[in-house]
Image 1: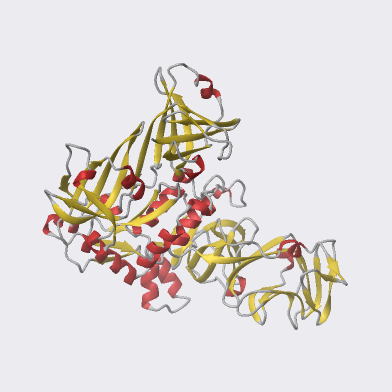
Image 2: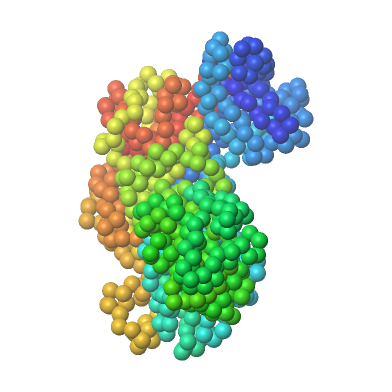
Length: 624
């Protein structure tokens, strides 16, 4: 006899229930465990919905609810036990087989437990992605600029961004600090403003400590309150495992040299002063850490107590990563210097260069391998793991790799007013006409709408698989979200005509740059025709995307319209084959063999249903 079990992990212990009563043996796992016949029902749904259908399947848990028999009131005390956000493991198998061989159906996260009726208790589950229903960035609690306090910190993700950032501190009429991201970023490559006063030598991420941004200084021009900036930048990066550990804290020294480092003294000295810090005095003197891999992207964070008059440099062997001339008034308090760089050689060098006598007190150095968040796999990992708090095991990385291989688009987004993380994730997925869903194994998996005739079939659905007396139902797919045009390459810091005119009085700009600074976004039109049934697609507003470049945007709009070159159908049926339920996932292609409708392939959109005792009722929805 087949059965379904639930291991309900309360904070104070685990309860074991099933659709039929049984006990495990002494040699099984768990051993000598009684499963009470309390499990009456379980509701399942795994689904995807795409931008062309104006939907989202990412917020649906694979198992929505289980219902427990409580006619005798024996489970009433469960209502007072702690279970929210705890795990329930559902398994299926034969009662006469070892329990350790049963199949894990789902690892579900509890949302709430309630008295469903006089005789039943309900445990409802939440979707994994519900943890993303929160702001993507924290609010400013304190800041030198009172106008930003209480507002959200800016978010900047992706490649080819045009963004202005937020004025964090108006230090003086000649100097300002701007925040462009709440997260470590890759780089800022260009910047423009009314007065064109941003000097590359004064750029550094992480000045002051609270921001990832830009120090902007002018020695000749008063920076007026109406002076805005437009930066061309590459946004957030993902950090790997920190590499230096205790060596980056300068807590241990041997023979006057910090452990893990070497010293190139030149005309100077390196001493431990104060304790746990490296004091670098003189000229052409550096501390060196050797262990970088050529071609690897890294992010380094250097905490300095002070930099006296002179020049402070962070270098990768002979390549200057950051150069800061001595500004005593600016360096008196501790500062954190953050840089992202691609290693040209194996050495990280920190100190004072030749012909620039000075003093630098370095308290801490942290170093990570880094990955740019440009394409969809890194986007999903960054939002779901880095910002959402899930872990790598919650994601099906192979499905994300397949999606990125099919649609290797660079994506970009910036915002200084706040956005919810799940909304940002949906925008990224919609840009690829893709979705995430919770698989039967509990992992988040990616799928994108494809023509099933070009896909490999995962199995066959026969008439005999349908519930007796039922048949396939079909209707037109109207594709309400389909458009024959697409917007891309959004400018998040659009300059006005007056601002560009003032800028051009300082510098000659190529016409292409002028257009990039002035435009709101770009637009492409499909060169692939749709079936006449979808003529409204040409009247729809252009699809909004985070895509950066023209080639990718053109490919995407052509792909969407190409899917509807023929008249499409949505179909549904109710199945009774539990094996097919366990094998079927959204995003797969299955073959239908029907006496009435013939043989054809379908794209699976939804698998759902309930398990009443040992008799499944399974419904599916497909696209063809």
